[in-house]
Image 1 (cartoon, rainbow, N blue to C red):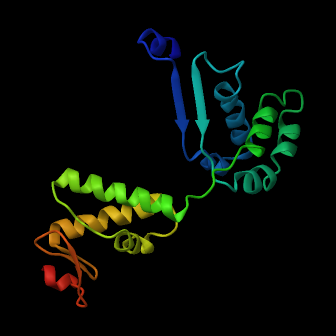
Image 2: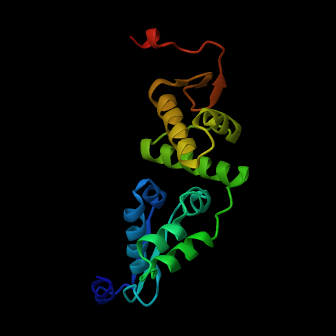
Length: 188
């Protein structure tokens, strides 16, 4: 497959596999086989030429699954004569670098870009302060993806109804704050 990409003029192929921690829910033998399959993407001698693979796992995978489910011991019990390449993959996963959490400034930057994209997509100018947009995402939890969803929902409400919670957008597209929050009955 990577040969096809190079023939098309690309330098290669990047494969991103997200939420790989879900393999921790598999049975013991299935997990070990998953590690063996991962070797085809992680180990240079097995990976196709001009292919780069990246696996995203939760930060607790090594502790919760590799240590918690005794993967090295399972490997010795199930594949005593063939621990490779699963052992090497387990070693790589155990030593994998962790991404640092985003700073408040980085999160605010993402939220501001979402506001800008939302405005361009719907041809309007929300003119919200960073503080207002950040406050609108507090109920979304600490994960960036839930903050993004909350910001989009907030912007959608402001665009569609002119109101969202305690924030109202006036005719000029500037924010004002009101005390009365619309209830579901107001929209029926």
